Image (cartoon, rainbow over all chains, first blue to last red; front, side):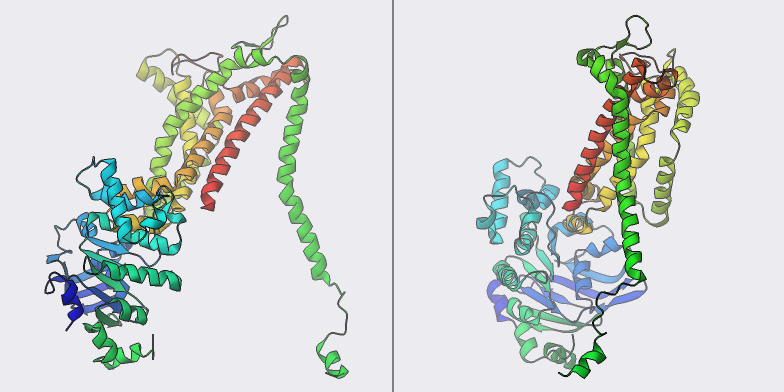
Length: 266
Length: 310
């Protein structure tokens, strides 16, 4: 079904995310209905659908950041790499260490670029006395992976919030990498960027393919088509179609998918 | 386009017509302008007044070395009056430092709780309570110092006098805490929520979010809150007059009685002859106080503004 993924992924059959009858309510409003998804490890999967279809909600429940709101109720299960992250014994801190999240609006912290990259590392590192050289190496490695190193290597003490939006978003991706997450969630990572920034960040996402499993929510269908190997179409809190991206855009199986892709609503 | 069209759509060239709205607008603008600058005029007027009253002393009698380095304040001596404010500066400073030691943990703790932990009704109730605390008149605080703290300190620490630095420091700390809490809470609220979300999404615990993200981001605002508290403590008169013991003394411990600068003015001004040397010396004290609190409040304001810009 997806030759692209088999080419790059080491475990093409492994599942990154498997949900079982996932239902989600915000107060009394039900946002997700019986979601059963198998998302493969090592590839980029995109989620598309009109605003309010639940794609961001789904993404945000995969690292449980949704729970900040307090009035969210969840029924069913989400297994990430085979462990149900909603089990009673699960530690939120560990979930969020292994499942990184990139937000719609770049949100670097108002501290130096270096400290932004090391923020997660310092939270989770067992080795509290990592040497300065080690940390410099970590910063360099992470910034190189997001293609930002050459631009910022001489000003690592500058505040992360002073970078351009595109650079901020890259920094937000870079700061997830030092803790070696298995899964990266991206919630419309390019929607606050201009076309050039979008192109640069897409290129970066493509660059990370194979090293990390990536689930990306987008309202931009061209982006889904360019930057993903599998695609999920959601509508009104339900999954309508989940297939290889090429197939979805060439021969959609459902009328709703076809209508959405051709821009008849959205 | 013909002439007929013009006369039908235009109003006939009377572009200079002014109706009552125009005059109303001018009047209101003038009133608002007067209201706006009146605060500045009054402050400047007060400064001019105290300077004028104190000027005679500054020109004829003022001796910089004596004024700031002598610990003897004997303005009522007939023969050779002495005007040294060192002991009073030490008194005010020691009380202010102790007050901040009391107020900073209380106000920061309360502000963090209200801004980051409390929700719904608890939060609203707490905010109202803090406002209420800020509204307690200073003479009431002084009364508490005099009638509750005084015997308590004598009992607990077994000292002869309970009106001392410790008493005034605690009272002043409690007085300054509410306003510091309000400002600190505003500073914490001003930290964008996406910073908290970002830190939480990376696996930070609640305390880590506060300690590593919220507090550094709100640093300037919190510093401004502390400085405003210092200004409040430094300029406070009635409560310190009642709680310090009002005896001129460079304190050796927190159980020594001291006298504060503002309290000196309050206590002595009524007994001096208008225009006398003593009277003018008190006004010079006033100028000094005014300048110190002005600088403290101005820096607090500038620091807070600096955060607001970012």
